[in-house]
Length: 397
Ligand SMILES: [Zn+2]
Image 1 (cartoon, rainbow, N blue to C red):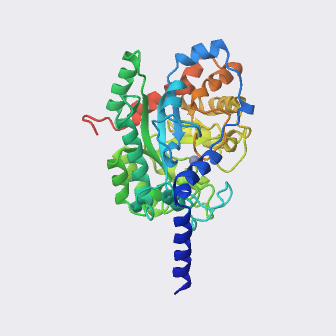
Image 2 (cartoon, protein in one colour):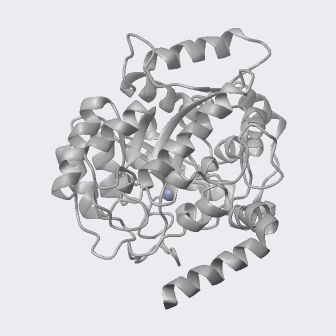
């Protein structure tokens, strides 16, 4: 018997012995440990902030809920979000991202593309066999999870694919006194999700994706990552991919991309882009946060910048630190370009989950923002951007 075969049989025996625990407990324990709420950093929400928050259109540009072994519609006991917690926090619009490959020992400085944690997560979370070896299939599976959740949500979650569908959902939200649905769109974090094939950009679009990040934690076939080894720019395939995305109406997300990739994408793109979840160097240094030069370049191109809630983005992950980063982004890029990009359930520790997002409203009031400025940052900027940049949709999808 070959060594490889013996190892495989050994693994199979181990898995067999531990089956129930392995397939039901492990992914949830891992998920709970990786997505914690540290409420020692939370702040009390005043009556004024509470009242204002209830009148806001709240939008968030980045959420990784779909990665985990959890039904988005069922109220969960761990992590940061589910449909109920989003409703409770008065979140009206959420960008649900899919994650297709993450390196072992993931860090912000340097990661190889050679290892992958998601294979084990896919197997232990009982994802279908087709997802084990294909990043594309992982993205499609997570997308299906969102569409299925919407289908069984009894109107509490609506996934939109066009500006027209978004407009309809917005009008419904305004009309109904009872069910205020969370409106979602689909993103994928890193275009390793196309498995190196240009044609798979079309596959993602056909499957409902309306936003895609060029890179995630490692350099992929499309672009260099801020956390990769070479940290290069757009590859020749990446240039074709970006042009195809714009032709289809897939919004380009520059979160995690290398500085060279950022410059290349800005030079090549003709449509407004987003940085879905980020911090700013001025309040929190680090390879994934934006310099003032990048903030200005994004503003000049009509981009939307989502400020994150976790320590990698704002350093101490408190609502006050979030408000400080927003203040700087507004001062440098301009009010209309700044939004929220929580990274809830993105293997992050945050001060509050979706149900407590009024803490940001409170922190913005304390930081001296006017109510109109708070409205813009908390969601109106996202509403305007999405209505202008989602495919118009003369017919449904
Ligand atoms: Zn991310």
